[in-house]
Image (cartoon, rainbow, N blue to C red; front, side):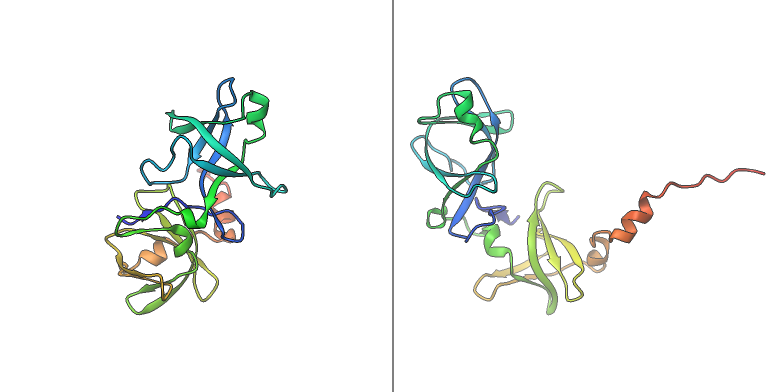
Length: 208
């Protein structure tokens, strides 16, 4: 199945940096932080590696950090940075994106793709132009979902599944797929009116 690279959900920056993880909370008493890893590349984090911590808006000044220790814990990665030695130090990092310069992207295995390279590509179903990829979502199923805006400005969700994929041409900014008939209609998100209609209480019929 096509895989995402380590720069999933690139932050709203100039594109010169990629995000490898996001600090979720403090962990321990020595300045450790627990982070959500946004990379599928094995061994991407190592002791001694340098990361740039981008704080939550409105702050935009990156802080360079060196990984002193690391270990997995309950689905997160605990990181201990040099010079971050207390809970109060760690609290300043909560919410930060942990980044590296874009030129430090890992070399991907064949058939892997960076999400930031896929956003903006046109999706073609055989020779039919479906629309442009605006986002890629994860966690809803086995395959990531392309969020595609078509010519009518309607958003469509298309599974980035190997069974549907024909080819990825990053030079032409095209993702060619072979989608099952009716899939686009099924995977179209509800409109605001449809969501409002579904939220209305159902009136029970009573015998009179």
